[in-house]
Image (cartoon, rainbow, N blue to C red):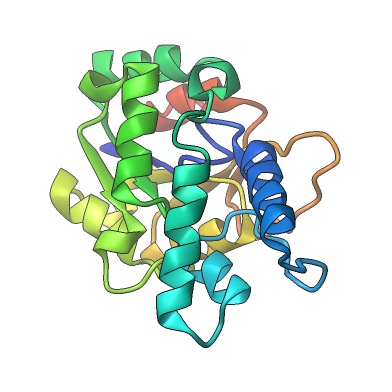
Length: 212
């Protein structure tokens, strides 16, 4: 039996990546920003995204990000609609079994808190940590190591659930057992660093309890 399960957010607990991409592309078009040369931001973080948008002028980069936030302030992400099937049930099952739960995301704190509130799962998560609160974000292992520290567990006692190559690498470097979520239709990513490939979120419960 594992002591804790730590979840990534985007692509694991919520299928938000397509909507995030749509919003960024809409904003870039409105601002006349040519995004044709940008990399795929799937599983990335704000520092990488906005560093590509404005690699040199830090002040302009900050202004663009704040403008992006204001652009969609009245249209919050529909997290409840985009939530992965079985989120609450999975967290409740782990909680009943005495397994600690954490959320470790590259998202900013305000995004994490908004997501948790939208799904009403604050009481089902022992810890939430943002990569922006750590010295380095994914693919560095810092956010996972910090989450383990707050949970009071060692890497060998932990399952981490991820989806993207960046996140899987961070989880692998943290020394935990790494689980990969199935990818949405049309998305192809390297998940070769995963120790286990899940068929759905609920699979993590028997795995954590040693029943699989």
